[in-house]
Image (cartoon, rainbow, N blue to C red; front, side):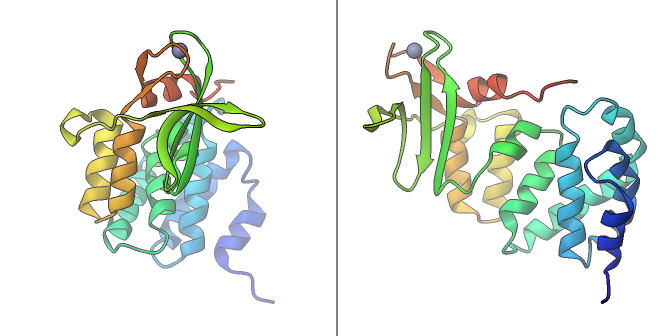
Length: 210
Ligand SMILES: [Zn+2]
């Protein structure tokens, strides 16, 4: 049985520990030609969220991470089948860990977040079945639905702006469209206050620092 170099790296280094950063430069060198190495490098970076001591390890891998970022960006512009996975790896490179963990393809995505005004649990749906804020009822499903208010491209800033512009650049229309909703506003079905979905979801899902 032949074991590929990237698999030997996995066996050699414990990828669930920060020591996996030792493997990162090797994986990045392999990542141009190996989909598996590209995925593993992204996975290691996503694991960096919230791990004590990872800041130093990230700083030590700065050259490899910069190389990996450029590689992911080139790969995305070829509009590959694994576009979303590559996009998510790039979010992890940018240390946008909660978006790397939460972003889906917007066919059937749900985000649970507390209303910042009345604290009721709000379910935000962005998918083919609708784009709404609702109260999720165990028996009745999503009740008291309110349509989401998407951001216009001009209203986007920061990470949302980057995500939208990148998806548009790469002709990922459904992703770009979903991002305008994710970075748009929701109306609370309980108290009718209007709030930013991304701000509330982000503050409710920051990495836990240990
Ligand atoms: Zn509310």
